[in-house]
Figure 1 (cartoon, one colour):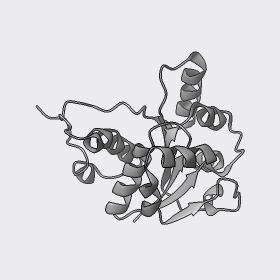
Figure 2 (cartoon, helix red, strand yellow):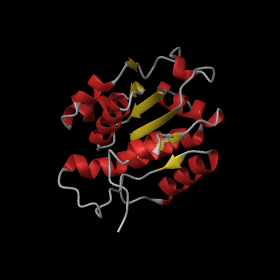
Figure 3 (cartoon, rainbow, N blue to C red):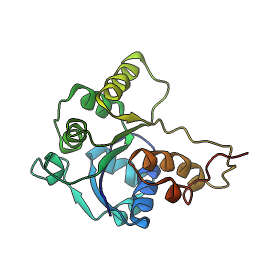
Figure 4 (cartoon, rainbow, N blue to C red):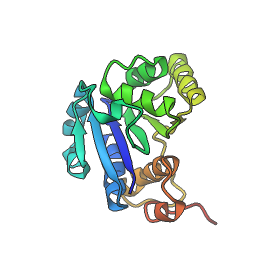
Length: 186
């Protein structure tokens, strides 16, 4: 069992966080939540409060004494899903002004997987440059762009095509991912 940090910001798309937490738990992993204040509002507004049911623990976004703020913690990686452009900018700048951004910074400095899932469109040049900066620092940027070739029949199946990609880049084995979203084959 691995431990993962799941950061949730105020961008729309809380269902991506809920489904990611649900699948990580179902696969036997531990989920530590760090939710920004706007993220909490969006989770509630979008009807995704079940997100909190899949967490093993939740850290206050202002608690810099939480273990995920330290490089000596044993987390296997982190996903920021959905990631607002403001949070992306703070991660790219290394500001570490809250626990969510600090946890992402720890993943980058410790060379742990960090997956950033922006939920914004269109991108302006600043967004693109920030995505480039975090990519160069070692993160993987996975826009919330679901695939349709598997012919998903529900919103959850569509969302899971993105969630499977997130989990792949957190290091979850491909065999387990095929249970979440069908891999491409003709």
